[in-house]
Picture (cartoon, rainbow, N blue to C red):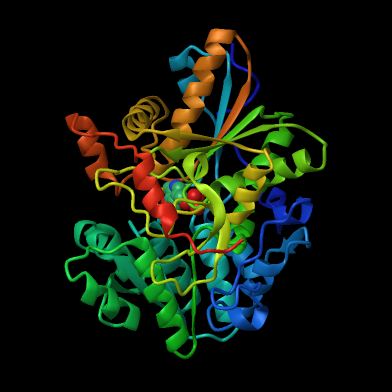
Length: 456
Ligand SMILES: *Cc1c(COP(=O)(O)O)cnc(C)c1O
């Protein structure tokens, strides 16, 4: 006998959230402010103006307004691919023979294949509204670049994407999706920026890194009139936009009187996890309900579980503001055999503060068991998950198996942040049995920490 809960819980259009929720408003200990790397004073609105468009700076700096109404134009874009389904994983439960009830929120049912579109459309909208000509950004494997290309095409904005060179060369498919939507894609490091030329001079054979592509994109925004920069994770504004994930999930669960005990998400820069947990964490912060929150991160890039809570640079060129976060140091690069995504060295400062305050747990997972979970999930639930999202699947399966041992009927909710169609080289390694796990040594991490700026 099944519960009376359908396989998929949808919201009607009129039940969809119409405002984003700002988690910072309910935090007693606010996240530490961004600092100017020169003066070490908090970044002001004026200092951020050359980089971000005005409304996004207001959102970035506002840690007191609880709700931001979603503009009509963004709501209508959301309606094209949202609400995202909330799925009861009946088939996975049966396969695991667990008494736990498992739900996942699937963010991959749009062309870009992930949750990143939720913030891309917001960032593009405010740039358009300000009368700007275009946006610059970086992309690693290409998910963010793809999402922003779609958003810019919809609104008629130019987009310059700096794509990490090894991805540009090895992942031509995403590059062509971006170009199809009208983006100009440049392999990074490039000779089109001063910081790119400097990096190329020092390391002519480099295949690039996310931190270096960020530096190039910021420089391009500051030096091209009518352009601003957009970032797809980590920032408070991105966390705000991604709250749509959690608000929809909570509304759908409330419809059926479901209350999760454990909420799990994968964490790279932290935006999909922060978005998913936002309205639940609100209740926990206000003492209205209790939940366990778990961040699932790769053991090869373990910002929460082995990082330091400190001010750090967000980019290799060290031109971005300093953010206080759990970090491995801006010079840290996960080992070359790491195929599971979530490679950024730092973590959202909002999530970092919640973790420091003991409101959230974190777990580091090696990639082979992560892909084992991905395969298991794909075979019973049908969806081919992104390697990033599969960290959350692994953690959810582990919790469900724990319930099997103890006989507890816990309700587990996890975020399925995207699909894995462009990650088939990684799946290939797993299928061939050639995937290996590489966990950094304490000495390797110490090298990254040595590069932390000296800020208290
Ligand atoms: C980018 C991405 C992530 C990691 O970003 P967060 O900011 O940590 O959410 C996770 N899953 C997918 C599918 C992604 O594309």
